[in-house]
Image (cartoon, rainbow, N blue to C red; front, side):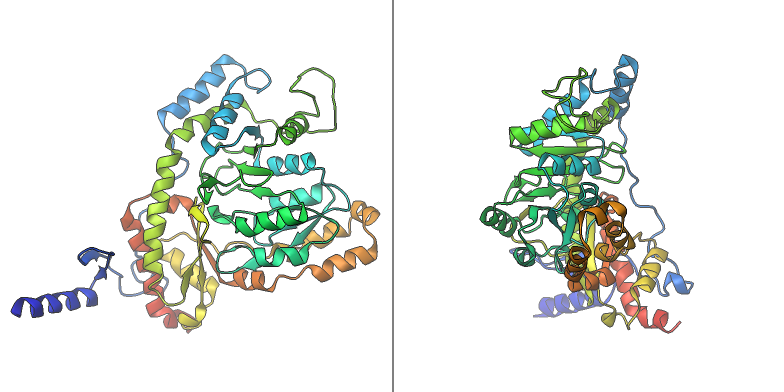
Length: 449
């Protein structure tokens, strides 16, 4: 009896101090030490929870330098003469389980090239989310089509697939879902709608390297899928992109368009269509081939840390980590996203919460603003080119459809952490959670200051 009483006292004392009791299914309860939460908030003169920087990016290894130097000294820097871009395309297609891969200059050019291959142009509508990087919308405007914004599922940060069908009109020619932050959109519903309405799906997987839906790699479920290898991305060559497809005709159309409209991969001066120069350089391709060696290990580390961080943050009132759909079998975690409810933090405004979190040594962001409300949307519709294509009643009808209230709410609640913050030891996650708990406990002092 004495030993049971002593154990209860020990556990109670531990829970009240700087340790937390973590229960694992089918296992004996274990105590996991938590970092101390220094008394006063750093914004109010206290010591910050964290003083060390998070892991830097990119991670550079000897094989990066070797690959880059090989390209340099061979003197074949353009893919028309070299072999690295082709080797990368074969390796990336093999890694993702796609028949074809085309390397491009950026994620934006990958999307732009794909829309051209699908024949999207003036008078067409493309369904897009309002919560995404601007490139998703810019490429639709660049082909003089209309981006139709479909509201957001706030719990997942993804396009709300239940609202897609209502947005479809006879002018709809493409569905362009974004796998935001590395988590998949609801592809079961999106693909079912696409089949029913006979619409192509172009996946924006620019943030979703190795992400999966029901064990299939993102970018391989629709007609086309696109990646970015920009400097912040999980696979990185400074700039760069790729198009994945299993359709040979679409691949050939993309290949031709991305190299000035040449035909059959010919590099002479005969052309079969209009096009652009969207080619990847040999330097970019060599870096990507080298960095692919560590992509899987880095991805596993992000997943493990994200799962642990989610367990910690779910215990804090007012913090709601982004929910993944049931079909998500792998989240790439380019971003770790959650919603902040100021009602649980003494009505501390999100801007002040972000300021306090940064002061505690935790980098963070408030994420995107509503793209559908950005001034450039109206400016584009008012441009000479668009006025030549769309009548005033058509523009007025477009603007009347352009409302996304759930996304407006998300843009006031969202908080992001960046993928590099998930590459360190598990203790880094403890410090992130400790900083948020500290602000939760003392939010009233900031709100009134």
